[in-house]
Length: 142
Image (cartoon, rainbow, N blue to C red; front, top):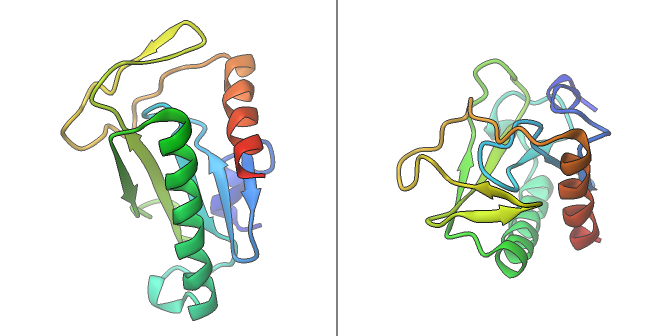
């Protein structure tokens, strides 16, 4: 795996591995169920990603949106390709909520709704709660 994927906690945060991409649970939960969708190779320009990888990307987006909508009923999904420090191709997948969402007796509020998410914000789950989040989603991806 590339440096960016490792920075986001791979393999501990892995939800699903595809041929060209991995889906990770984002270590800092800017909103509940925030993820990273990362290309597995070392390209730093979107134009360098193969056509085959883009076809798979389309399938992964369908998986992500279906799983999160059916399970957690987000309002809208933000896909942010920032790549300011982490150069390999990746997206921050940020589900957005107009209402408070409960998880493990914690009220998770999307503080910046309906504006851009604050990527430095973290809901601060314990390791046990984070692992529960990961296992719920990992099971849904299988």
